[in-house]
Image (cartoon, rainbow, N blue to C red; front, side, top):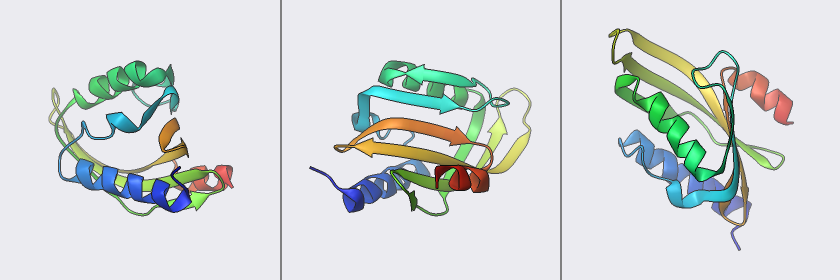
Length: 131
């Protein structure tokens, strides 16, 4: 059964794939019980249940961009959660507006599967709340 070190390595490998442009990577890591949370003020804000809803929300989010680059800054264990602050640089598909933002993901992994995935617009606040 995967442990804390393996969970960190799973996420490091996932972000390497995402950074290389393979934004479909990671589907095999999603638990059937997955809960995905996108914050208020974020496109597609809300809570999604299961891999199908997660993938649909991600497709909708990514379809808004003609260019999209995500780079992880760190992998921080905060209790049962792994917080990954990251920088995203993107260009709006319709507007052409460039976005350069720092956000974070919070992951909860059980038995090698993601059971909770949360997006945060405030990486530092997320780390404080998770502790």
